[in-house]
Image (tube, rainbow, N blue to C red):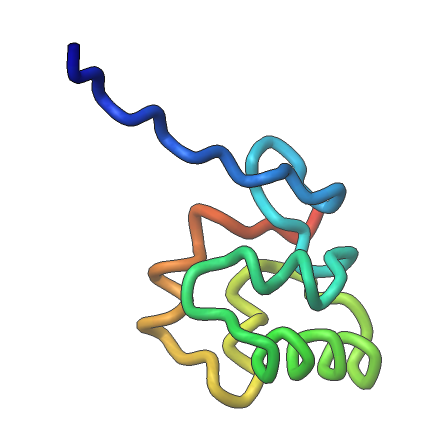
Amino acid sequence: SAREAEPISLPTPSARAGGRVNINTASAQELETLPGIGPSLAAAIVAFRVANGPFRIPEDITGVKGIGEGALEELNDLITTGG
């Protein structure tokens, strides 16, 4: 008998809090689990955080080159700053 395929569950990164990725503590690898975030953007987020300190609010991620309002809309429900 044919059964529905079960959804693939990805391993939960350690930086996830309440299902959200903490952009202040996530590693580049953990950031890459977010939609639209590849290795170069993940590295840019980490570099931005190192240079400027922690993000105060999730919207601050738009300060990272390559992340605009459209990306923020997609990420907003998936990220947190832990505050």
